[in-house]
Length: 190
Image: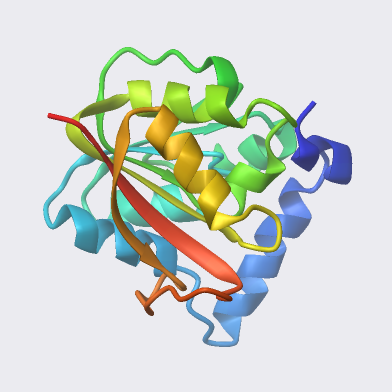
């Protein structure tokens, strides 16, 4: 069972969605991840939102012209996501994910890597990497007190992905040792 389901009981979807609605109502930026991904691609692309939750990132990416598939294992989150048209929603385990066609970019925003089932991190990264077209990007963001950047980098290396850049925020602030957040971009080989 994933750490997310252990912590939430798989019933947090509506509350999670409401928290972001409230943040947006106060003028808070709730689309930083989508803006980051959109800028990386620079053109409409095919995107896999791995651990899509309630669909906030996927829906915004569709609004920006991308073809998006959102995958999550939490039914309560997907029930909320399915209320949003645009992306294709898939209930599934990232450790055994099998989708038919490759993606230009896979995004795992919102601490997805730290909420996986313990011991499946490499398996998940391998499955995400397998869904990238040659030259495609894997983008992930997580709290560094939950997973060290060096450990994450090892997962990427073992999956055959090449580092592109590390940032401290979705706004692109430079990553430095001691940053409490990491946004990592890695590329599949040609």
